[in-house]
Amino acid sequence: FTFRPTHRGPSGAVSFIGLGASTLGALVIGCISLIRFLDTDPLCGLVLVKVIPVITIAGPCGALLDSIIGAPVRAK
Image (cartoon, rainbow, N blue to C red):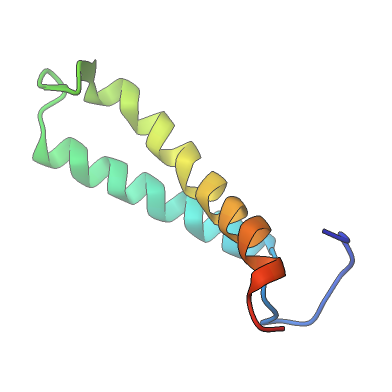
């Protein structure tokens, strides 16, 4: 919540490397789902190719939400 630089490892700390890794991980999951389901198969009423950007954006959003919610309640 303070946006101050901190050392590696404390609860709630966010780094560009961590956000990049969560983005890349979500993109890989989206691509694997593309292999599993053809791009013409509907997934919950949506075409999978259109869902991949949503999956990719959801990765870092989930990581940030975890840091925001978890920072006050985790052990410091």
